[in-house]
Length: 320
Length: 127
Image 1 (cartoon, chains in turn yellow, cyan):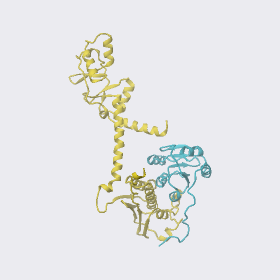
Image 2 (cartoon, chains in turn brown, red; image 1 turned 180 degrees about the horizontal axis):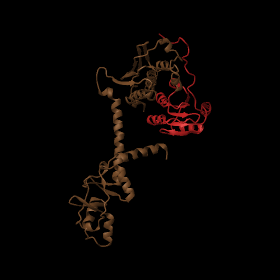
Image 3 (cartoon, each protein chain N blue to C red; image 1 turned 180 degrees about the vertical axis):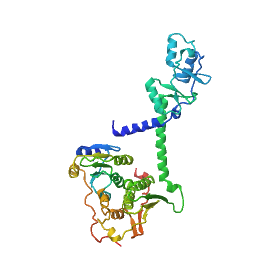
Image 4 (cartoon, each protein chain N blue to C red; image 1 turned 120 degrees about the vertical axis):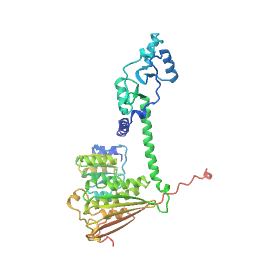
């Protein structure tokens, strides 16, 4: 089995654990009574196109009668026997709030193809078959897929759906100083937001890389962390990273390739090579860096989003 | 070059993350300096590195790199593996050194990004 298909299988397995029996069972159960005759049962099974039915009296589940019991009765010429005399009395049941995996296991264990479902008080509320489990799981898979599609669609069209003279979406993140382990989690979310909103992979990458460099700067260099604010508009992304110290003493020096004040342990982790600000400028369409020692730093970055290409013209009829 | 071929050339073993052996790379990148990866690596590359911190995965995610191969037989810590799984970047390990791993892939036909733009002239910074 390839890795890809095993991932699909595990998704279905997860669903089988998540889904409750109540969500896949048939709530309307055709039942018979103990004093129904086998002859009558044959007609019920034939007309309803079912292969078995729970036997009920006064709302209580007494047993289950199946097509196999009917065949035996036919062979023995005992079609006038009552269902109550030929039914299986020890009935396997499932609770409606149990997980579907319980039903799968019980069917595998007992070999039964249909199991009545009761609520916790023992009242019959439905019946579940293998087919119900397969249908229920597929339905949920499709539903999950459609919800994801709808969410993506909505995100992509937010700027068309919500009309104002200037609509923008603002995302804010707090970045903790020295929290190296979490480094990049804000940028990851920013990048994903741009992708969800329909930004091209190229623009998502440029914003992601610049945001990541800015986020790492806040983590590595600031005394008490900082804030990142991203304003997304249809035609541009504006990112601001602000902190309250220690500030940059010499901005010219800070912009020079290879100049870094990062401590040794940061360098060991592959950062602090003095390339960050240059790389931000490289990714951005515009950048503004203001800082004063002892006060703090404010970094602003702009990305312009090119308008989407016009739809391809209809092929002209005359060419044919 | 297909991921399957990269793994064969490097005799690499899988560590974690979602693997699609048909995934295709147009280039290779190798660095122990994440700043360099962020600056120079092209998207759709495979990254070779000797660093095993979770930040390697973040860097690959941001730079649009599709897979990470740890050289010198290094095994990353659990945080790195779980982050890779979360963002969908597969991780591998090869016992070749960085030098040899790069050489083998290049020889097998996987190019790099070509000449880099340089930033190193002092005083080039503006304002």
